Image (tube, rainbow, N blue to C red; front, side, top):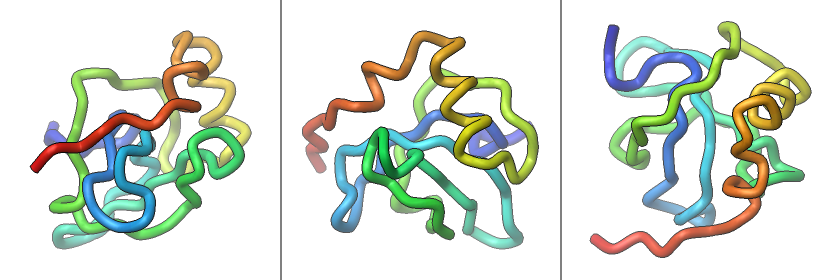
Length: 93
């Protein structure tokens, strides 16, 4: 059990997607994970991301390893997080 496990909701802190919510869908070796928004909800497309560019939140949703965007969207709807994901937040360093 790590902080960056599958289903963890995070906020991007670096890059063009700064302030957008995302979900970890796969853990790679080293310091990398695969995240998705999905793009049509939070503007974060599925991509490999360094964990230093993420701020993990306490929230975790139930998705399987490598879940597609439809499964992530359904899990967000079931958890009542869909409206939260559509908004951006201000990230202070």
